[in-house]
Structures are given as C-alpha cells and as structure tokens.
Image (cartoon, rainbow, N blue to C red; front, side, top):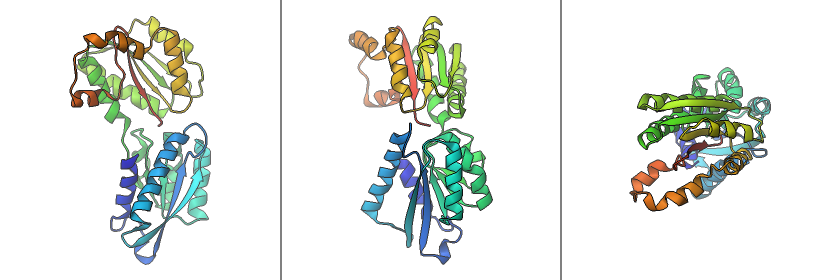
Length: 282
C-alpha cells in the first residue's frame, strides 16, 4: 500500500502529468475505492496511507494544492463507472485514482480514454488493466510477478503435483495462468483444477475435490473479505490444516536464513500435504 501511495505522489510531481496543471493552482483527484462492502480493508489501508503522507508532507506537490474527492464504489463495477462519470463531469477532477479490484478498473478504462484523464490504479493487479487505456498507470504490481515466482518456488521446494483452485473472474484466471505456466516450466505437474464462482460462501465441495486428487499442494486465489476464512474452515474440516502440519514437522525443518524466510512469505507450505496459497484482494 505504501508503494501505491508514493507512486501516486511521484506521478503528480512529473512535469505535464496533468494536462492543465500549468494554468491552475489546484489539482483535483477523485478517489474511487471500496469504502464499504467486501473489500473495505484494502481501501482503508490505501486511504490511511494517503492521509498519513499528506499529514507529514502537506497538501502541496510541485507547487500545486491537492484536493481529494472520495467516492465509495462498494465493490460494484457499474457503480464505479457511474461515480467516475460524476467525478469527471460534475467535479471536474484532473485525475482518477484508487481501484481496489480489477472489475472496477476495467469498467472505468473507457471513460479515462474518452476524457483523456490520468488514471492511477493503486491496487488492482490483473495484468491486462494497463492495456485497456493509454491513460492508465499502475503503482502496485501485477499477479504474474507474484504467482510465477511462487510456481517456480513450489517445484524447487519439493512440491511435484499441484491442484489449483481459483475464483472464476479476471484476477483468478490471471493468477492461475501465471502459476501454472511457471510451475510446469519448472517441471511440476498440474493434476487438477477448479474455478469457483465469485460469490461462493461454501468451499467444501471444491476443497474435497482438491484433497481427493492426491495433490501434494494446492494453489489458491480468492478475493479478500469473507472468503479466506471460509476457505480456511473447509481446509481444516478436511484435515488439511497447514499450521498444524507445520507444527508436526517443525523439528525436522532446517533453520532458514532471513532471505529464505522472506522468499517463503507469499505461500504456506508443509508436507505431507502442502497448501500453497495466495489469498489476496484484487
């Protein structure tokens, strides 16, 4: 989140970053974020980062005063598009920013192009977003940056057969493709996969399929909010609790350096049943 906020501030400082900036004293930024609904945590973190930066450094960038207008998308792409239109037409903002989840960023891309307004994606990580408008930049990351590394790491750390379980929408498919691409290139085998409906509170049947597959590991991508704990519950109920498995194997695990521990952070791994998990708000 810190990188996302600093990326936005850096862009504001670039000469010509906002077309009419030379003729005005104020730069208006419309923040489109999920202040309510399933993805509030990510929005709160980004908004807190913005508030902290402005508290520490003030509201002037390159001699221009920054004026923020916040709009709550509630995680609804149609609402994000409508609010973006209002910000452009009624509030006359110079920049659109925020975008916790991919569907919202994609919904606003065409408006950004038509209005020729800089649009800063501060979180949504599906790789195709920046291809949808020449006015979109991203200050966070893309899913292949995480998931390809995770795929290579999983095979190199002894996980030879993996089952993938992802939410059936753009970020989930992007994460699945990136992981599978790197994992199979390293020599691993994908022995099964399932795509879960986005609005799915019960993972029981899907987790059972993964367990029955005989995989040594599971790659998971689900959105934040209520779904990660629901998934964890389904795993534990089927005896696939990675924390308990790690406790049993703790004495046999070699002591790792700080860099090795850092490399493991994107995943949770333990044998005999390894759960390699990416749970994220995209």
